[in-house]
Length: 411
Image (cartoon, rainbow, N blue to C red; front, side, top):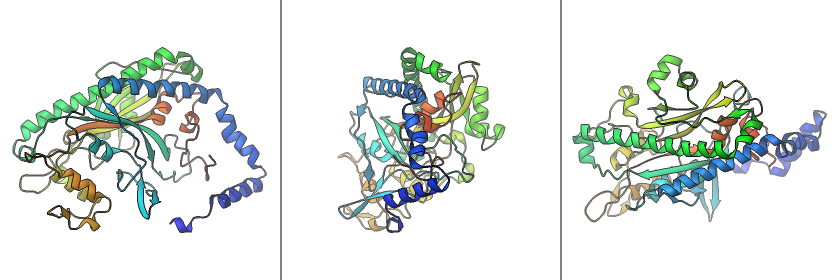
């Protein structure tokens, strides 16, 4: 694909020619689309709120005892994603291709291997080449490169495969307890961040025509199955928002990524639960949604998902089956005396899966059982500030690249 692409200079030349053909010029375009935004009061106030939001999360997470993790921008393997993107970009280095980061999900797992590590967090890079709207309409919420506060915490339950298949009642009880802990953890994080914004950014919020509501626990919850039946497959978030009476609320039990826990998934005989039998109560993930508050009317604005997370798959056997069923890998790894005999069939997943299957001196898996989530920085900022001044996600970013914004990104 790379060989068929034209140099960026040629693309810019063609872009300028198209602008000239329309009766305008590049200078006007840059002034109107970029300079005016960078000099706007709207972006100034949005950046002030963003700074408080990010710093307050860093402070909360470090005070909670989580370690700050370095960014991983390229790796042999990245988050495969359950939704369609144009393609996964790669970087060639030393004769090898590395994937750019969709999210740091696999890196977070491995960074939690030490049993004393409480958890990790990182303001991670994310490159997702989102597909533009088929109608060419500015959808507002998408960026092809964005920041995400990636967070993962150890659960330390040490449930093995024998208990997984042999004692489902005990496992479900543990999972429900940990699920509640996960939701409460993220609720406390959001409350801390919103309190900081309410305290430090009142003038910025006022200038943007919006308000902040410091929420209280527990946030309202809506099971995805129930909300979808009531409001429809494409409107269940908005429908739930209209009933939530809160700026933040949860949608729970969404069928999504291969690493978000479904329990039970693998039976004692090695067979799997049919997908038609899955319900929201078997899917241990969660989406946090947010909606702006219009200062002049007190009414809520549009609903956006701002955080997605879950209790994670942690046992080797279900991890492998989920990867195969999601068509991330084609076959199970075959390991013989430390050699992965079919490693050439596994793409970049061979080393990762070799790490997942490791055991300690007592024969126990060293791969951590965790819960976590990712908070989209720009998405959250947009969700909280959208109103009379902020209209689209581009308005709260200096260099945001929405797939529907321009045919060519100049900066």
